[in-house]
Image: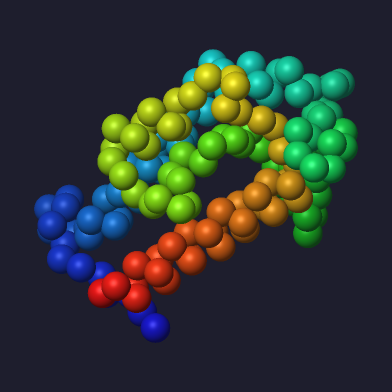
Length: 138
């Protein structure tokens, strides 16, 4: 089932509000990679050149990249311990998003791809459960 697209009120009438949010959120994520605590967290997890210790359940030392179908892909992620958008609460505001995105080291951890995927899947399931619950009240 296709989601309703909504009115195109942004970018000279070519973008929906969802497209606009996605654009801003993506660019904030890109610029957040230059945030010093993210680089410091990554540096502290480094055990040797190209290898990092996962702070997740596996606690393994993993290479920064792996080959998948002949291509190098990222294998370590600097993850927000407290999600940028709480999956149980959902969207709050741009101020909240920025405040939760640009955090100090205490709220950051380095995860291997497998642990990051597991955590992300849990957060997606919680968000889906919240959205499904919101639909029941519509």
